[in-house]
Amino acid sequence: MSTQIATTSDAFPSRIPSWLANFRIIPRIETYPFVTSLAQKFAGKLLILALFALGLRFGTPDWIPLSFCLAMITFVPVRRRILVTVATLIFTFVVPWHNYLYPVYTFSLTIFVIMLGAVCFWLSVELRNSVAGRHPVFFLLTGYSLFIVFAAYFPNNTPAYVTVWALAYTFGTYVWFIAYSLLDGRAADRDNFSLQLGAYRPFWGSTHTPIVKGASYLRRIEARDGEQLAVIQLKGLKLLAWSLLISVFSKYFEQFVHGSLAIPTFPVAFVHSVQHRPDAWYMCWASLITAFLEEVFYIAVWGHRIVACCRMAGFNALRNTYRPLSARTIAEFWNRFYFYFKELLADMFFYPVFLNYFKKNKKLRIAIATFAAAGFGNAFYHFIRDLHFISELGLWRAFTAFHVYLFYCTVLAGGIVISQLRKRRPPPAGFFRGHVVPVFCVVLFYCLLHVFDYTDRTYPIREHFRFVAHLVNLGY
Amino acid sequence: MDHREEIRKYLQEMLLQKGDKQLFSDDTSLLLSGRLASVDAVDIVVFLEEKFAVDFSELGFDPALIDSVDAIDSLVQTVKK
Image (tube, rainbow over all chains, first blue to last red; front, side, top):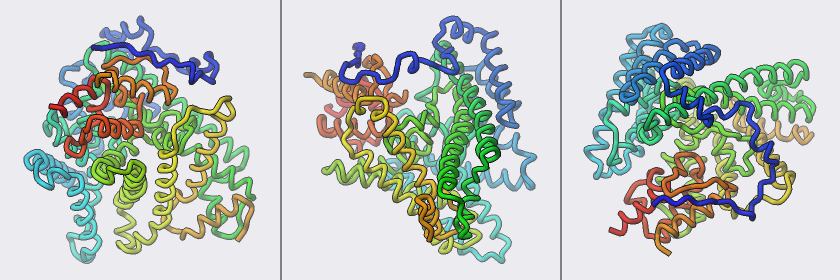
């Protein structure tokens, strides 16, 4: 049965005028029958690919191989998943060849790490009823953490020292991708390793965070027919256009605020504060707010580009950043700002805790699981990502220098917990009370938190509090 | 009220609370399409645990299991068996 349900209700009337709600800077071309019909034809596909390649030219130096891979996948949709693996291997071993000083050495390590991933995946499938098979990510992360400890105490006067750290770095770039494939190992409809490999640092790009998660997610969002593919590709094209628009806007915004208005960048304002010659309090605010906005633009530009490429490959992936400045709660902003990082923390830390512990107390359960994800998971992710601090400072000093970020994670997790536990209510009446005030409060929270997010582990936490004091015109 | 109706009503209220007034059918994707977020998934999990004794610690959590009215109904039927 498939009954259409209308959720329209007079209880929650729209507070935004309809002309404004429906206004689009980039028209919704994927809803125009003529355009979607054209996009399903050979000429239409060529046109979309050509426009996309043109857009990529302004966004990435690898636009030619990327466009080639997208064309290959577009014209052979029945082999999409395996072609994604082929494209990923091209982008792992062929495209970056000249970027490395010792490519054979680097790629040998990469092959070794991929083989380790394959072994872990095989074990997670074969031993899925064992303790390790039921908690594969826990064992993976524990094993990797122990290897980092081993590397940290490895004698640095031996020839193997460099290789041990190189292996730790290489594994670090793959660890979360392997983790997603291990989670998929428990699924009844799991993909085999050849398809899992396509989601290991996929060709459309990623950071240490898997952007668009793993193979499990890919097979659920894959286009099922030509019409769906056309719509998804048109959405991809639009998203790339968005990325370019934001990129251009961001460039002029930075020139205007730091050039014409002479607002210092946040690192500069922070160093002035550390040197006891702070900028005026309003300049500190201006610097903080512009840094926050620039970060939003920055993450939107590269996130949109990556998701756009994924969509062009035929996967209806959600955006990485979706209107974060319209979020009315702290939790909503966290969900909208860097979606795939939030998903990573939810999949690896939140759900394992939430589904297994404190089941009788819903609020406690949510609070503990949120601290496990946004607090512990967030800190753990960044600690093992920035391995150079450990190799340079040693394990203990790297950890103690991490205290500012630990504070950041604790406050962030606390904010998200409170935001989640507050009873959901419809927004208050009126645009100002219903939208402006909540959005202002959310932005204020994240702006202030940004003071503690900015850390190269050089300054103690009192310097960060000193900057906060300057914001309210208190010097100490 | 049968299971399906109860699930449908719950999801309908959840969408309304978010101000989502679009139509949805029993096979409409709600989580994977982004209409509901992971915060909402948590509420759905609690609802299914309390109403239908679904134990996700045994099943393992997969958003696809609770993505639509059809998916949730199928999950509930499986658990009942």
